[in-house]
Image 1 (cartoon, rainbow, N blue to C red):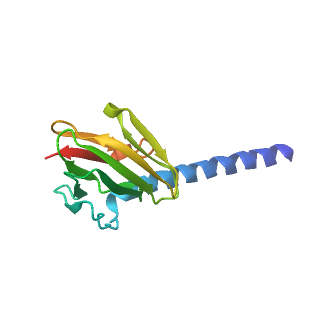
Image 2 (cartoon, rainbow, N blue to C red; image 1 turned 180 degrees about the horizontal axis):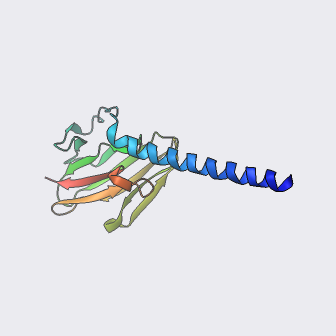
Length: 150
């Protein structure tokens, strides 16, 4: 009888693990097909829709900017600035899970707990773009954005 109970508990634990993995997978893959609420950018920047469908904010000449991490996405997803511009970005995590803001080339790796905000100083490239991402949710480009010089 005891072996049967242990076997039942083991099977129940395995089933729970499969359900949790499925829930995590569906949350991040659903993001790419669901519509997200577009927030109005702060008064310190102008926002518009980019050709790829993601939100864009123009931050040229600005020194500070606020963005959110919510529904496994950054908003806005693209920041347009000027070559070499330094910008202090305050990232607010409006989700119930931790998110991260990373730029590999600038050695930025900041984790933001649910409901918290962190201010990160970034530098726009001299030309082209540089990618920022959440290292926890980068799969399938769900939480990826870019600093772009126009």
